[in-house]
Image 1 (cartoon, rainbow, N blue to C red):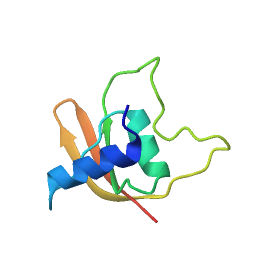
Image 2 (tube, rainbow, N blue to C red):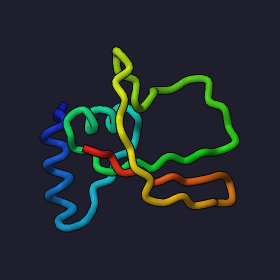
Image 3 (cartoon, one colour):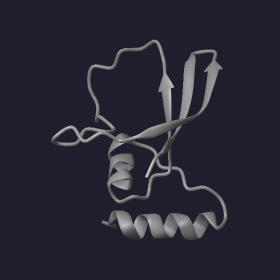
Image 4 (tube, rainbow, N blue to C red):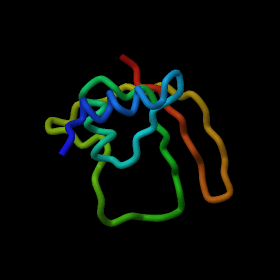
Length: 86
């Protein structure tokens, strides 16, 4: 099973000058911890989920500073694009 580093390297090579998008809270969290996550899309929808992986669940509650890029209203809710502040 490939590790995060080799997976990111392959994705970056395939993307060339384009963007690499990751899906899934666990992979995004790993990318964040590795310093490889630049932006986050948060979709706010009128649904309450009772289970799943928390994106920023870190022991000790370390905060992740974000800066707003855009807020877009969509038919089903709101999309928030945020930049990870380093």
